[in-house]
Image (cartoon, rainbow, N blue to C red; front, side, top):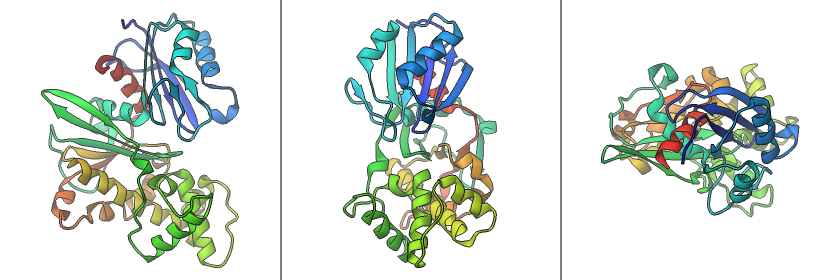
Length: 319
């Protein structure tokens, strides 16, 4: 049984966002956001939020950055692991929905209007065509939304764990360097490259190729240096957006996403200018022999705040 208000949560690898909703189509309210690095665990974060909100909650929907299979949930880039059954008992939830964070983002897509999106390149969406949401953050996520018998059906994935395919010589060199680091034994996934830590890994690899060592320790430092005109950081950011375009185009081809491909994640809203000026769209369209199909598919950046909470709310209707 679903009762309102309900708790909605978006747990990523860096931040957790919590809010309340008064229905599956309601706007999230009383939103709080905190960094995981502040300490504690998932149960403590929920307990603190509910105590401060002073609300009596029997229903919750949790979007988490990782696969949801069975009772034990272990987000891919976080130490905030938890048991669904234990969480339900701890807070007395009568109904608890747990889903992948990009599953939630897919459910949010029908709620987005033109004012929530920043177009990147051309293309026109087919109204009932399959849609895909992709995004780099602490990791990399992908999900699809497919229309069937008048209903939108979300399809979650762990596509970030698919193997990364370099498209030119410099990307091949970078991929080889990343494959030698971190005990990866040569295998490099999309998530090793197309995410925040991936941007840093690209810049470090470029430094190694140049015979030097990067002094940067965080992806934010690379982005800041790139926008300030540092040549190597700018090259790293250019390669990052190019690879994002390639993997987003692959997702579009996988689902024949004539309804559009939508970009989410915590990195891109801070890098709109470089994204628009990048090779993202050119690489997205570079899908011969189906380049014409790729060119017809629109791409857009989601600019609406907290879309994951919208999707978590929508999951209370769809589950």
